[in-house]
Length: 350
Ligand SMILES: NC(=O)c1ccc[n+]([C@@H]2O[C@H](COP(=O)([O-])OP(=O)(O)OC[C@H]3O[C@@H](n4cnc5c(N)ncnc54)[C@H](O)[C@@H]3O)[C@@H](O)[C@H]2O)c1
Image (cartoon, rainbow, N blue to C red; front, side, top):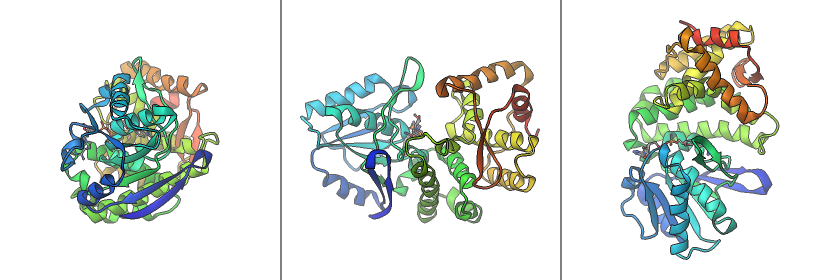
């Protein structure tokens, strides 16, 4: 087991990130945790050679990201007589991890937390930064806390069983990190190792995850409390993408929505003369290399519904909707766009 990052976060806390070669190695580490509860879902838990007595296994899916699931976890912890120094181990995708982290943050005012992400999206996006929570009153992540894990254990081998659509969803976030990085390594690696990545070669995945996390860490450590606008850059593709996801009843995956949103952010940046042509061409070619073609159109008749979905982002931020556009590689800017600019962008390159 190799410690690949030690990430300083808000309030002097640190999250240590480890890369592990095998599930056997993970089992050894987890067996040394002492008093603990394992939290997983029915798909991810199949990867475990055996499920310990103290476990809460929920059905898979975003609809389980609910208060009822949190209750099961708190009841499980109480029935095991766990104390504040006991460990909540989340093992699964972002849904399981957000729930386990929330339950751990409120159990006895905060128990210890270890996260083991098993989807690509959760490895590169959902384990660092300390956001926890669940969906409530039909609103995604309405209730949550900020509670960083003490450690994150990544076993790339777990990605072998991940369905293709979920793998692609994670790749959308990885490509986003490549665009946002001032450093060329992730971008070049995605170009040079495409075939190995798609074949889910373990070493290629380890390297890709490591480079991708480096970018996320760069942004969160410069804005740990999300107050300087720097961390907002990680929302590249998200404002357009979320609106598309919500209009489609969340039938497209998150990463697919984000990749589409990146196409639209590039189109908007080009139209404003803000995004250089050569950068946009390179970024589009990287997106296309990974099969994100951005072709989906918002027909005129559906545009008002699309704008409504865009504006619901505004409610969350309490101000005007800001889009992340790109002035070049590693150069995001937050910009308001009028409806006409949005309309032109969602027609994009078609
Ligand atoms: N806290 C954060 O900073 C943060 C960041 C991004 C996303 N999120 C949250 O993450 C969630 C999405 O996460 P996700 O995309 O990982 O979805 P998910 O947790 O729903 O997992 C996707 C599917 O893959 C299955 N699965 C997980 N690991 C598997 C494996 N190794 N093999 C086979 N199947 C496996 C799951 O059971 C599920 O069916 C959302 O709720 C989002 O809000 C949180």
